[in-house]
Each structure stands twice: as C-alpha cells, then as structure tokens.
Amino acid sequence: MQLNEMQKFCKELLSKVTYPRVGTIIGLQEELGKLSEVIMDIEIYGKPFDKDRIEQKCSEVFFSFIDLCNSYDIELDNVSKNRIEEMKKKINKWEKEHGETLQDKRKKFD
Image (cartoon, rainbow, N blue to C red):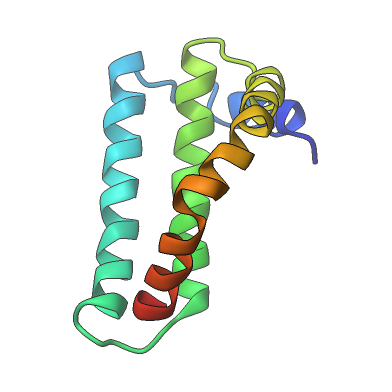
C-alpha cells in the first residue's frame, strides 16, 4: 500500500471519530511515549528484546503520525520524496563528518 493510499484508508477509518487537530499531536506524543517505554525497558532495564511489542508500538506511532498529517492535509508521498531528495544532497557530508563516530557508537550501544 502506498502512503497516499494508507492516508486515505486511515482518514476513512477515523471519519466518525475525528479529533480536533491538537488531539492528533497529543495522540502522537502519547504513542511515542509508549514506544519509548518499550525501548527503555530493553536498553536501560535489561528486559528481553520483544520484536512483536516494538512492532506493535511502531505501528501505533505510524498510524498516529498519519492521522496528524491528515488533519493538516499533508500528503506524505510528496513530502517523503522531497525529504529523500534533500537527504541525498547531504548524505556524503554526514558520512564524512559522522560516519566513523557513528560506527563506534553502534558497536558500543548495539
């Protein structure tokens, strides 16, 4: 499913329970907090890695993000393509400036 199709599906699904726009950002923050808790449980408190739980929380964040974008008429297909083009221009610079440091950090933290 393309992003625009996903947005349309979510908009139709939520059409009878549409939040005020401010509710969409609060909902997204709530879902990000839940995802953060799962990651913190694993990375800080040493709980076992549970991919299914992380996937569930990521899907909740993704859905909330789509709802937020829909509430402001933001077309994710367009903004995603634009962002990718911007990143293509910057990636070589980032790699030169941060590549080695990030590799070291991944070894340490992952």
